[in-house]
Each structure stands twice: as structure tokens, then as C-alpha cells.
Image (cartoon, rainbow, N blue to C red; front, side, top):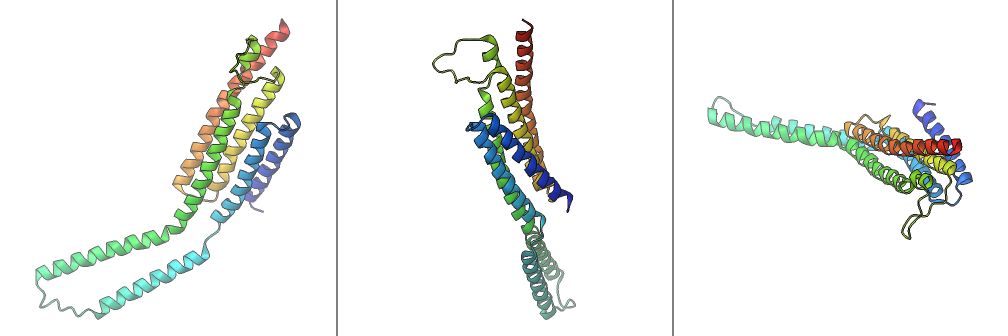
Length: 237
């Protein structure tokens, strides 16, 4: 078993355990439903990353056949030309050379398009998956946005438009910690796409998702530390 498959299995087990922990602590909560969405993203990543890591043999065969046919046609065309350089003027030779150069450039561009087609298809599938993962990351950010330890510690009377706050200090820390863990797992899911696909655009997207997760996790841990310090002060008093 390869390292990538082993890591994918361990990631699946870790996420399943986190889902159970969230479901036991906060049943029927938005966080619990979001954890299920993350599980779906992981299954999708396992399937897509496996497809991306495999060579597309039919596409490569078709590309190879097309290239061979084009080369044969080109060689036959050159072979059939009846060129007499002794009677050709310099102007004719330059025009012929320019036309041949343009044809070679176009032929090279066509070959590059064909040989890079498989990579571009795989890149497109990975980027589409990253869009969904980013949406899940922002959903985690949204559900933790109203979980403010300051409202618990200061004891301010809520207004009519204030979000409902049912969590105690200890449960709030646990809730925020689960959000941070989900963000960490979402960042790891993106790594599945890049570890067997050496594409600069995909690697850059993976780094971008990890930076996004780290930024939101930093905000969450600031809340956790404020809440922990506040609870400690309350206990001392």
C-alpha cells in the first residue's frame, strides 16, 4: 500500500471519529451537519485524486496516433515537393523558409496543446473540487462567527437581534476546538490532490487553501484563549 492511500485511510478514520465526537456533544447542530459535508468532500477527494494520479491511457494513445499521422502527412508532403534551388531566387527561398517556419510553429503549438490536454483536464477537476472545499471552509467560519466568549464573560444583556447563545464557557471552547479541527482536516483533504499531481497551479491552490484555514484557525484559537482565561478568572473569583 502506498503512502498516499495509507494517509487517505487515516484521514478518513480521523474525520469519522471527529464526526462521532461532534454528534455526541452537539447532536443535530449545524456543526454536526457540516461535519457530514466534510466527509462527502473527503470521499470525493479520494475518488478524484485517484483518478488524477492515474495515466489516461486512451487519451495518450489517441494523442500518439494523431501525432504520428500528422508527422507522416508532413513528411509525405515535403517528399512530394519538387524544389529546384538552382533556379529559385533568393526571394522565393526566403518566402519558402518563412512559410516553413510558420508551419513548424503552428505544428509545435498543436503538439503542445495535445500533450498538455491531459494535465489541463486533471487540473480543471482539482480546481473544481477546491472551490467546494473553500465553500466549506467559509461555512465553518460562518458558524463560529457568532460564538463570542466576550458575551459569556461580560454578561451583557442580549438585544432582540442578538444571536442566541446557549453554550457555557466549557462547551464554547469545545465547539470552537471542533471548528479548528474541521479546518485542519479540510486543509489535509486538499493535499490529497497535490501529492501525486505535480502541477504548479494545483500546488499554489493547495497552499492557498492551507493559508485560508490557518488564518481562520488563528482567529478561533484567539477566542479559545480568551474564553479559557476568562473562565480561569471566574474560578479564582
